Length: 96
Image (tube, rainbow, N blue to C red):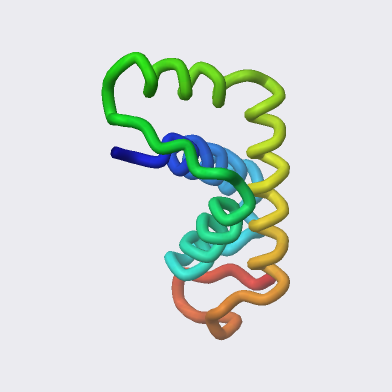
């Protein structure tokens, strides 16, 4: 069983990160963004394969669902950038 939203949120995070290189990409910041974003949505647990998983993935692919997820992820990225849990200048980080 997996949380289908985690897959979608992770994919949107990766896309936003590529288009917004000013945000830190270190593992701590990635984990913090994912945690904040996932805590903003109701989980959608599905079996990895099967009709239920397919239906859920189709629902999450709609424009309105994607837009909502993008807003949530970008907000999490901004929040983490304002208070990163690593020292500024730590290897693998970007100045905020």
